[in-house]
Image (tube, rainbow, N blue to C red; front, side, top):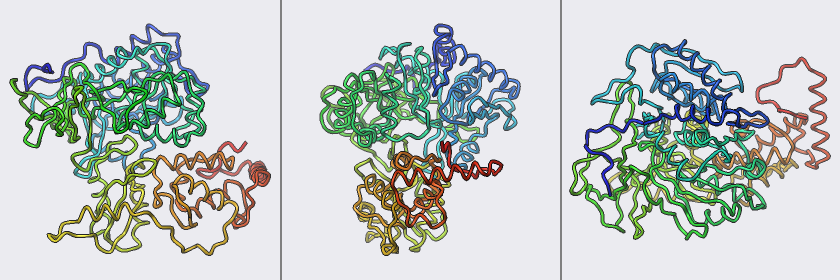
Length: 633
């Protein structure tokens, strides 16, 4: 293996061409071609550049000193143009997904206050405003540190202190990966990429910009949340040729996408974020026989992915290897003393790369993400300790076997369970808490076992949904009078895991309630998604094993079955089966109390919808309540 760089003190390399320059070159070469397609709206490369130029000029007028600029919004052409404009203005980009809880958004912008904010929530209504005074160099470093010109973006991940970590990424590493991916897989103007990654994650950069610097078209789905069947149908209808996805989400599509018609157009599927199982690869190839599956691996600290493998269609069972390193990246398998392990021997995966991030941000200070290490027979270099346990197989490929600590990935999002534990432990009445993951048929879920009063579960669930992203909220909260203990007084982790894995039991508090037509149908959808035989009206979706992915499927099925449209957030607000029945009755325009005896036939639903529409037409001046029925026609 060759050295990635010459000396321990050497900084990451400087990019020959930044992403902003690569985008500009693509716009010149493909000016009249469609860059971004969002529903019926198309944006050419020339139009994308015009919008970015205008936003850049406004940003320079509003924020004369280069600093951090937050782009708040969701997947859209506006967000892409805004991100490009930030770099054109010489500023550092911070992406903030507007779907995150308000407290989480506030925490991100508090950890690293932006000098300006670009709001992209409404299509075509982008605004730029100054947010904080910005004088001089916004970042003080302890040892040399990165120049302003190479401070590309700030990405957030969970932290062991109970706060998310802010990582400062570099232009060089980002541009290096995007160009490598384009060239390695022959991505060009004939490709149509699905844009599926939300803001606030560093993988958004490859999801959005690998296609655009290649002259390909970035295709944005018509809705932020789509059920599996709708997503698979959309991939076919839009003739998508390439996409990035998390394995658990792809597995969800295979499980709930309905009868699959093999799609001929899809040629590239890049999987990353969690272990890729061979059975998923084989099912994927049945659905998309012409598709090359690529397994990517690399943490945020090393800049996007640093290892890849083209996985054969007939993949063997088990977790697939992550293959070989990108140019300029090496992996070492080290034991607890940081000694090099022989091939086939398990150890911690440590990555050496020239294209690493600059470090962890803490206010105006920056801390290192890499540690110094001396490879055999070489001068000291810098490596990143991933915390992943793996080995090098006889083919020289890296295989991942698990996590060294309690850091896990759910739906592709890296989560440190200690952060969830610290948030729960801070709630009044909680005496102790244990948090772990439990495997389910639809992917792993987070379970919290809490020592505290028996009625605290509801309070905790409501609090966690306010303070944490949905993917981090435990699917189950089990309350015990006391956690199991070892003789030395420490928590018995093995016993707690057994408690967490225990199958949920339905409550019988409302067993005597007479089921209604709506209740029967909604309960049937719950049973199908959660693989349960019985649901009681008082049962709550997340307490029975639901998670942020299955609730999206629940939302899609309700909309399709009952022919209604409403925001997904309503299901988070109405967590129990009985609450959702009442919500559904309101959406269908049923009189108060009528849901207990409503017929669920198609004719009756049509009559109820017509009644609701007529009622709104009779009162045109009445203000629509928040989250009211959308597009009833």
